Length: 476
Image (cartoon, rainbow, N blue to C red; front, side):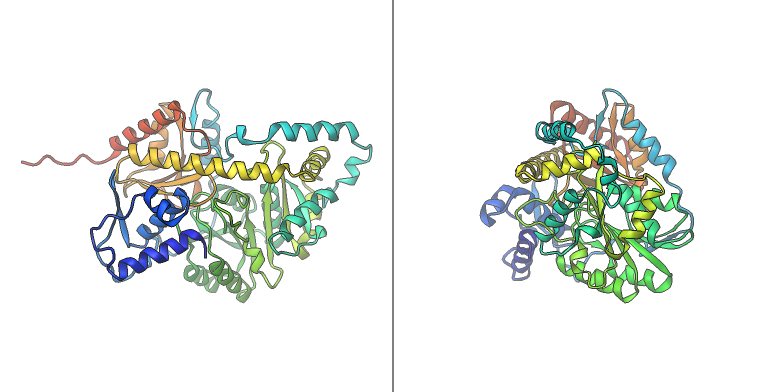
């Protein structure tokens, strides 16, 4: 059990045993962290899960208090269990938002990658220079699919460190994780097939479905608990699903990480219906605390998980190096890659292999996680201070995104357009859904230092949201 889960269990028990009564104020975030010996982000996450389950409620500028007694503590999302989309059409809007984020002098909360100043450029550049000096004439041929052997061996060792046995020959190096995900999806589907995605989901998944002419089953997904397995089984029963594209660790955009028990149940369910899992695990290194969560692949007993990840979020974005641990699908994926990109850059593969042979990566990851946790907490606090109390801010232990929910009826796309007029870019919820369930939501990248400029942008967002709220009638 993770530390935040232990804290949740402890506070639930205290409420049930009336240690805390309805209306009682829980210890402040800092006090609870001190009492429990955990980080501030652990307390934030635990309190928010308790709030989502109805045990506590937050009060603007006064903390969390015990909620009135409830009959059922298991909250469920408000949207429909499963949404069918025969033809996905999302790419134009995604392109518009991504282009807007490139506007000069913009305060950009919409980026998908973390702050590039967090990357270890000096060490990476040193490895790149050394590779350039020793690059053999045969490097292009030596690094054709499945990719550089030394790099695949380093990746296999990282799986082994988590108790997973993945042979280097099962690993295919790709041009970023998105190519790994696309090739994996293409290898197990044909045009017209049904594919399950989360609701909301990473917009890249929707773009892939659109490009490959696949049909989407969007399954409701809770901001703290993750995908609803009952709804997922209903989808698997009612449609001939070929694959599920899911994120089980630090999901983008919501941020949740599935518990180990839920990952086990997920894999048992997919095995029951003989469905492939395409696991998007690009944020797996960005956990907070001491325990790295296992991927769902660790619980796969039937070899039907294609586990995709990359170094773009944890090490360097511009190198565009990803991979898929594809098992028996490794050779079909290599053949598809040979027909598309042919191979991933040989010098870049060799540079990363050289860098991973040192201890620099682990030292970098420890510092990166600490910095992301500090910045996420600081931005979360600023948002709570300056946004209207009606805005729900979902905060998780890991990654660098926050998912915000406006009051029902407000349009986050309208907020996005108004924010652009103030040189502020956010990522509206419309990007993460094939339907309209998340139009009142938006995502923020909080990996950047909370400078005065970014704090002022948060204040402006608060003012813009207030301008969208319905005017309350005056009392007479």
